[in-house]
Length: 225
Image (tube, rainbow, N blue to C red):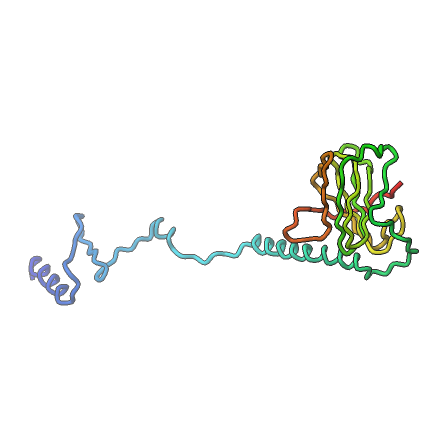
């Protein structure tokens, strides 16, 4: 059988099988490209690049999730511990003193009462509270405002920009140890400005959407003079 006869028979066989016409390249040796008959293999870079490989789980991913879980746990634990203290659930054996009346103040001796031409409003929550204003530059105590639990009071204060500390608790033990074991002390990290002839309100009810961000103090507040 000659070459022409073999090509004819091959084409006839493919036509009967429904494989369509054979296409050839223009190289010296013929390579069929129909795919049903013959598919040239590509083992080059593109082939290796597009192969599916299962992704390896990175240890850093597990560490990240562990840190997220720890943050959530701490986020729940700190408010819960604060509420336990304010509710008076911790054993307190120190002698209890009467908490000062709502609207009472402790003022630094250097403050002139005539300079108090602004007002600070304190809305207390479930704990007895002091809101303290400290000098932004020196850190010196300027004034502390007392508010009994669930009280709402506004008192005169000198205008200025202050570092604010909030001290809350259950049983009052005086200006040296505050509320003893139930003392909860927090600082507002951003300075608070109280303009002259204005009222600045501080609401101690913690809300998810509240705008008073506080940081829990690692050390107890300094004793009042």
